[in-house]
Length: 46
Image 1 (tube, one colour):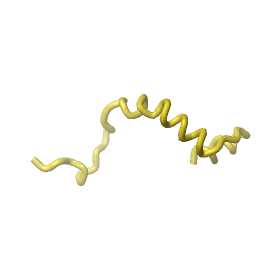
Image 2: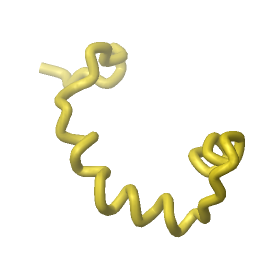
Image 3: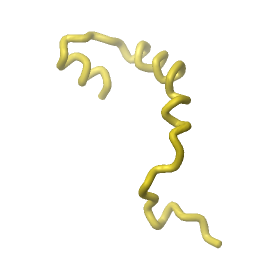
Image 4: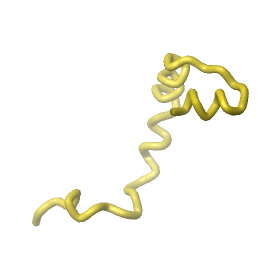
């Protein structure tokens, strides 16, 4: 998907490039906190 979006803009990348970006920068996006919407089936039972 990322490859397709960049290719549309004329930027060619491989799946390995995207993987390297995810390994390098992915933790920054995962630390933003919980999503504002959590579907009911994802709530833990209490």
